[in-house]
Length: 436
Image (cartoon, rainbow, N blue to C red):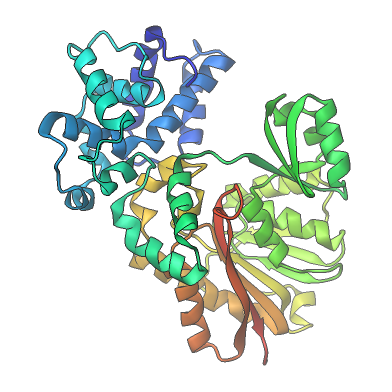
């Protein structure tokens, strides 16, 4: 939030208390949209300010709890032990005014304090001495909390670094980058060139940036308000997600199945390649997501996308033209996952129970890939992808699949996006069916 003026605290407290009253934290951005619809007193700028503050609260959630503990009980705590036992339920241990004053200090030590705090001056001085000066009394685990990082994730991080060949600098960049918001990446469509899209948005007052033929936005005119967006000349899609779509090297006339299509960002990107030839079959267990995909496909003039529900409980009933050629040329599985690769953009996701993949989630991924692979034709490709950086959802799942399916072989696999690029972090494996 840009302005920590004291008059804003009561509104922040009300929003925060309403959010904390939710039984399950599920997608803060959508929750805020619904909340503002019931609170007519907030103008557009207010909504932006309070939303930014709420997202900052999510990024610093556990760190604030650690600050409160260190302030009250001393800095020499067994932080790893504390981390293993910590959960969002412990938010009740710290009152709302104390919580928000810590967050204000993190942003600006000159921030005014809520009137409810009797020891604000003492807290501020302690924070300056122990946070800004990076006291040696505060160990590595404590300092990691300020990056939105839990020691609980270190084992998976070590394994990820080993598999991906990240050096120490890249590993540190990955950790420290978790509390840094990446830019909004755009994907041209309707055969619009990057050059044309860049100029069109620039003319409409959008702050656009270029990295090669990639385009991102960082403010100015709202993207959804531009004529360029209304005409369907681009979609908002993270760069790592674009790389997943590019892993599906489909050509006009190919038959492609997007298994867990959601609202269809990758389906649209694939349809762009097909140039309204061939088909993209988009399935999902959530019908409302597919309705959104239909709307987006119509807007972009893609007429070769078909949608219907599929729950992975049985093999797909293939369309006639797919069955006649022995299956799909390409099958993309953007699998349900912990979403750990989206923490930079969606910091609330790191505090959900599914932030660390459990047996049920891993079993669901296995079920989907084992059912979907039956629809890949001989010589065709299966692309398994997630928006997670954790090896147990990625390389380990791919290896388990290959061990039990000798008719497939790995073409290539890799992490995508951050820390090599300023985006989300995702994974994709391209697997070829070598025999029928």
